[in-house]
Every structure is written in C-alpha cells, then in structure tokens.
Length: 519
Ligand code: KIV
Ligand code: ZN
Image 1 (tube, rainbow, N blue to C red):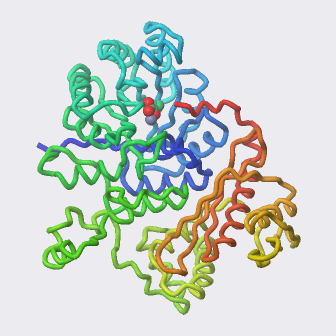
Image 2 (cartoon, helix red, strand yellow):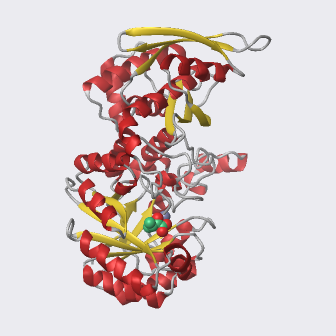
Image 3 (tube, protein in one colour):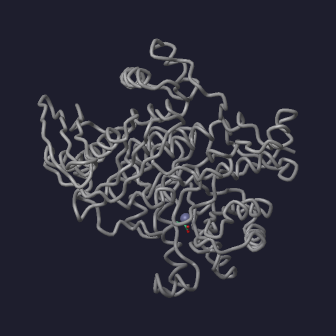
C-alpha cells in the first residue's frame, strides 16, 4: 500500500506576513511564491485578497505565475471578501478559497456578537458562495482549540454539505497541548471520514506549534498549515521546515506518511524569507538557525570527526545547506561562472536581472575578500525584488560626527537629473534620512530600523531593513539596503522604502483603514 500524503499548506505570505514588521511588497511576495512552489508545498496561501488592493494585486500575480501548487486566498465569511478572493485567484491553474469564522464561545459572544445558529448560517452562505468561484473550498473553525467539539461537528456537517472539502481546526491562540490536539483531531477526522480532509493550523504561543501538528498527523490530520521560519501572528505558526524534517527524519514513526516537500529547498527558502523580511531565525532555531549544525564542544567535534552520526541526526545537505560555501569566484570571474553559480543556488534570472546582479557582484568582489553563498543569495534577492527606482542613490558623503555636528551630503538621481543636498542631524543616520527627505520632498517617519550581517568577517555585508511611514494615514513601508558600509546600506534601505511607497501610492490611497488583518 502506498504512503499517505500529508498536504503542506504554507501560509508565510498570509499569517507569516502578520508577523510584526514582516510586510512585503508585491515583487517580494512573487519571489517567495516561486520558491515555495520549488519547495513543493501543496497549497500556497498567497494572502488575504480583501485586505487591500496591494494584497489583491500580489495574489493575482502569484496566481498567474505559480502552476504546480494550488494558490489560495483567505476570506472572512463575508460576500465581499469571498468575491475578492475568487477574483484574485481566478487565473490560477489550481485554486482554493479559504473562508473562516470563529466557533469558540468567547469569539462568538464578544467578537462576532452572533448566536451559534447565526454562525452556522454565515458559514454555509460563505462556502456556498465560494463554490461559485472554485471547486476547492476550505473552511476554518477559528479558535477551534477553544471550541465545543459538538458544535464543530454540527458546523462541519453543514459546510461539507455546502461544498467544503477541507475542514481546518486552528489552535488560533496556541493554547492546546499535543494530547489535546491529538484527541480533537481524532474525533473530528473519524466523524468526517471520507467527507473532508482534516487540517490543523497551530500557533506557537506555548512553543508547541510543531509538536501539536505532528500529533495531529498521528491522529488523522492530512493537511498541516505552517510557515517558513515559523513566522506568523504573535509567537508565530508551526515551522514548515521543522514539520517536514521531523516527518522525514523520524520515518520509523511516520512510516505511512509522506510529503511532497523537496527538503533541499528548505535552506534557500529560509534565507529568502529572512533576507526579504529582515527577520532572522533565532541562532538556535531548529533546522535553519545559524547554529543548527554548529558543533562547539571538543567532545562533540571529536565524535563528529569519527562518525558524523554521533551528534548529527540531519545532514545539512538534506536541507540544501552547503557547509563549505566559500565562493570560488572572485573579482576576475566571468559572467558565465557567475551565472552557473547562481543556477546552483537555484536562481534563474532573466538577462536584465543577471546583468545588474553581475555588476553588483563585481563591485562587491572588489571590496570583500571572501564571498559566501549567503552573500550571493542576499545580493540577488535584493536585486530581484527591488521596485521601480524613482530615486536612485548616486553618492553619499558623511562628515566626522565624533566631535562636530553630524552631517550628510547626498546625491540622488531622478529621471535624468542629479540632485545634491546636505543636512545636519541628531546623528549620522538622521542626517542621511533628513537629506533624502529634502531632496525627494517626502517626509518619512522612521518606525523601525534593523541591521543584520549577512555572513561572517569584518567586511560582512550589512542588510539594513527600515520601516518608514510617509503618511500618517497609511501603513508604513519596508525598505532593504545591502552594502558593506552600514550607512550606505541604510541610505539605500530608506530610498528603497520611498521607491516602494511611490510604486504603491495609488493603491495605498484606496486602502481601507481597517484592513481586516486582525485574524
Ligand atoms: O489562526 C487562525 O485561526 C487563522 C485562521 C484564519 C485560519 O489564521
Ligand atoms: Zn493563524
């Protein structure tokens, strides 16, 4: 008998984007979706179409690009949401609408102010309407972890009858223990057997998201919802890489199950998301943390030299991590060798992106002695996801700030004109950002600033992420800058946010104040 497939439903682009500071622009979302498809996820939840015109646009572009994974949009059990979801995914080869309504007493009474009967009616209407757009409809009992199981059976009967084929049981607040999730899933999957697939969606508030998901699989769940690097609302969601590697590594326990995940794409996916969001996995994070394969103590190192399996249960190569990743290319390397290396790292670039990435690589190779795979990944990601450059940094000059007043002279190109200006500030960064504001005519408010080093060495690339609000009534915009020099990277990040803002300006104006992103 062949093994049963556990469907992997990735929600990095939806629940993951609800991580504070993780918003992404359309180009970034498309690159992530392409990588998720390569990774082999069965369903990509590409966003929440009704949240904003920007979300809608990203979902519909992903729907047109991705062919091997189902593209899904989330929708509240509201006609307008479902219509937006249906229209956004219309062009996808395989498409799904995921609609939800809360089923726990506390949510029904205080949040929805609806009776259980009204909730069932709303859910049935939503699924019925969703089926007019797609054949594949998933229904979620939001806060299933704190819902009455009798009520969940009743609402499941009704929505299955209306056409839902997946019933998702989210532990929305991450409250349950593995034994409790196991019991809930067992009862629900026996009850719905042959009528619907039972799915789980576990949040990590008690650090149990992955354990709960694995216990769910043991008890009948055939779809698991998760995110790369465990991103997600609050403490995040169950991490995809941990679930996939647990199922693979503990084949002795999960002998009847398989996923479609190509685990060699895990590390590239993790890096892509960290580079784009600027949110690095904690160093000791399982599977993808910087230390996940580092053996520090002498006893461990000795054991590893004698037999790697003494201390290693997963080979780094299984997740696509090359431990000996120094790039043999240098400043004299040619375009062909560069292209070949990128192909090995999984990047296929069109001519224009290849040329601009190669140019940036040459500049970097001139300054940086050792170039690692992670440097290249960051550089190419940065190049591929940048929005149209309305303003382009030409040069930056800083005055010594140790004794005098910090000041910056910035030169920026707009269309064919180069504009130069200078300003003083409270600190060097303040001076840079103020000068950019003076030149561009836009006054940004810096909401967040983060710098991470991409690889090792004193000459490591700095990856700066900024979050800037250009208008009090609009959401803040993320920008990234990459350079050996942190100040230059900061200027690029700030300009990146401004360029992104300008490319989205029309859409942002249409954006509702309550985006609905509070699920
Ligand atoms: O956590 C949750 O309940 C959700 C649902 C919308 C599936 O994210
Ligand atoms: Zn969630």
